Amino acid sequence: MASAPPLTAADFENPAILLSGPVDYDMYRDFRAKLETALAETPEDGRIHVELSTLGGDPEVARMMGEDIRFHSDLVPGRRFVFLGKAAIYSAGTTFMSFFAIENRYLTRGTRLMIHERKMSKNLRVEGPLTSCIAGVKALLHEIESSIDIQNEGFENLVRGSKVTMAQVLEKAPANWYIEANEAVDLGLVTAII
Image (cartoon, rainbow, N blue to C red; front, top):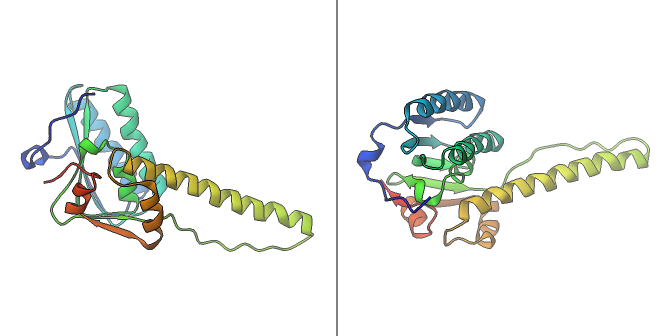
């Protein structure tokens, strides 16, 4: 698709998909219902606007929502999915935003993005014959390694085409990287502030 023209505030007056709160399975059900309605009501050369405000949540749910956007973008390449972040786009919200092309990412004034590493809280109990203990330790290690790979794929989606490098994200994400809307525009992570 050719580069899309920038949008104005008037373009965001009535978003088809309006979401707020934690990124969880309730949000996913709401998102899917609104997406189905928007797909039915929007021409193949039209725009579907998604507005989100969230303090974060489940990164896998964010990925499912993002994959729905990617899938429907691939199905009908002429249809434009546009993201508008309001107030706070933290954690899983930023993961979801990463599925939109940079030219289709917008923030409202004063919005903050927050990027961080995935978190894990697990106890590993090692007990029994030594050889059988190895399997449990390896399984947890594989889970951590796989989660890091998935996390880094999301980081790569977020920064692709921007001025931000993966090295910068990997350096700043462990300590929660907060990015104000103007800075996000300067870094090329979003197109504009509405």
